[in-house]
Structure formats: structure tokens, C-alpha cells
Length: 209
Image (cartoon, rainbow, N blue to C red):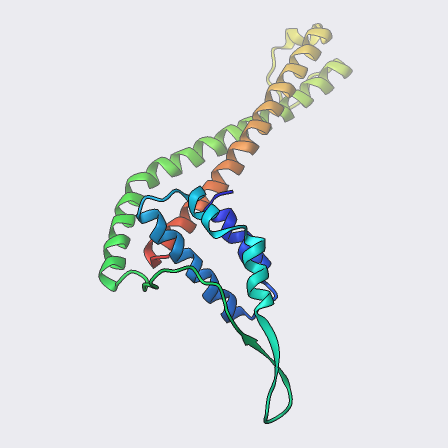
């Protein structure tokens, strides 16, 4: 388990706490990780020192006890002995740092945006080609079965004299097109996932979290 998984599990286990309380706790632990990593401590060692997310969450949840109010006798939650990582809370990046990081991000994105658009063009092009091969293959398959040329196909007429050959070609085209579509599906999915992660990382970098 690494930092991101650890913090996600901890946040999920603290859902029973009020939002503001949970937000402060998560901020403290994120800052603790940042400080330890700056000092050269590995994520695994930080996690080992902190203990499991379940143990930490249990300590926070157990620290909430009912307190009877003297004024209205209503039960309220009182937080006692909350375990917090020992580090100095620091604020996010200053305005100057945010501007500088934004400029750097803009320059980098300007450099790579062309490659990114070109990559999407290639993915879309191969996807369209795969669809074309599949539909063309099915059309040839129908032609081989009825031994009659399909109007929108330009296959040599001589092929229609050999329906078995035409049938084999149609199957090959369908298989190639289907394989292309499967590959394009995974490549597009991969691209979308890492585009989302990159944008999320860029926002965190600029905001200073």
C-alpha cells in the first residue's frame, strides 16, 4: 500500500465523522507525508510508522464521546485525545509560486499538446478503420453467401466467381477489424485514465497540496 491508497482508505474509514473534522484530519496526514518524504523517508516507512488506516480511524471515532450540554441537555460530540501526526502545518503555495507553477505548466502543456492531439487523431483514425473493416467484411460475407456483388463494394468481379475465397477474405477482414477495435478500446481507455490523473496531479501541484 502506498501513500494515495493509504489516504483514500483512511478518508473512507472516517466518513462517520463530520466533514470539517475529517477534512482537518486528512490535511494533517497529507502534510505529514509531505514532510517525511522531503526528509527522504520512503512511503512504506511512513505508513509503517503511522500504523494501519483502520487503527487510526478507530482512534478518532472512539475519541468522540457524548457530552450532556448544561443549557439544553442535548448530546453533543466532544473530541478528546485525538492522535495527530507531529508536523507543522504549512499553508499552500504562495501567490507567486502558484503563478510560476501555472506558467511552467502552461509551457509544458503547450509543448506536448500537439503530440497529445496527434495521438488522439491516430487513435480515432484506427478506430474508424477498424469499424470500416468490420462492416466491409460483413458486406463481403453477405456477398459470398448470396454470390452477388454488394452495390457499395468495389471488390474485383472475379472474386464473386469464387465464393469460398470471398468468404475467407471477409472473415479475415472482420477479424482484423475486430482486433483493431479491441486494441483501440484499451488504448483509448488507457489514455483517458492517465489524462485524468495528469490533470488531477497538475491541479494539486498548482494548489500546493
